[in-house]
Image (tube, rainbow, N blue to C red; front, side, top):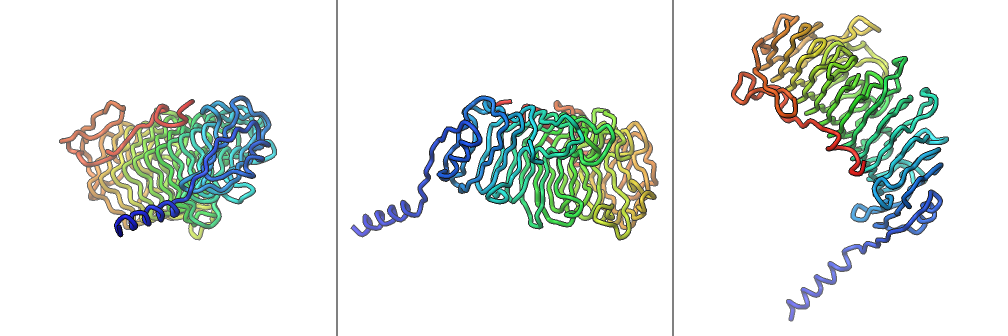
Length: 450
């Protein structure tokens, strides 16, 4: 009897401690209907947009869901709603999901963002944009500046989206900082067809995290498993302008630019693939700042955009926030550089210009592979406190007197089914270079319906 009563008590306790989840599908035909539905929306509800063309719509999605029961805005069928004309979307509140919308051939109207994670309920928290496309959302004048996706708040995610054909000033995806770690996640997106600015100006980045004034702010943004194709807007495909960010498992294909650590410290760049395909202006990684970890990356057939596949910048004494900070205590390990059009590593990029005189200090190079049949593999002057361990360089002239830990030897690489070169299992370079690599394709990223 006591056992039965105890079980009943436990069952009742479990019942009353588990929040009830109200869930309803609410049909909405336009932005006004969304606004009206939000007055009574509950966690778990789904606002279902009528399939069709939504023209000149300012969509405000502001509500409060929960981690267990987010509130969702989606079309009847994925991709079934095309938002166009002078239209935009704001996501405001917490635990919201926007999924499956097609933004096509429009402009954001009077706003500076097509999609922004802020609105009437402030900056978004724990919200998600997924399975969505923005294509050719361009003004008549390419000098008109606005942003395609603007991340505000904290713990937001942009995933499995496709951003195609931006031709104007302003970033495709940008994380705006407010002095606190954001912990945003940007993953499994396809970013493509960003033509170069004819005047080669700043402000045409495909992705930017922070600003020059926020270079010392810890952001903790993760950018992983994204495919960048033909992103040529400017030299900075990704412009890192904050601290403690992670760039992992991304593929850059035929992009005229570099992943640039422009401002900030303690970035992690690992297991990325850079395929320059010989394209003019293509590059690898440009390094500025302190305590970065650059490991397991693969760079092949890039041009001389930054005078080296791995380009280490010279710094400016007592630099302003928008200047060049000295490079210090950076680990460069287990990377593979194949057939670069310039040096595999430039040690002092920009030295002598704009008061840039500080060479990189206390650098660690270990277990890297450098293979070229072109220009000398290394260029420039090293600073103090550099360490080299188990690095192989082969093919072209070294260009420097080899320090201990840098050896000239054929690594005996072999090409895999994905077209990437790796050391033979029992060859002289076994265990060296980049090995944990995944080459992303259009089928592995972006919306499921596109």
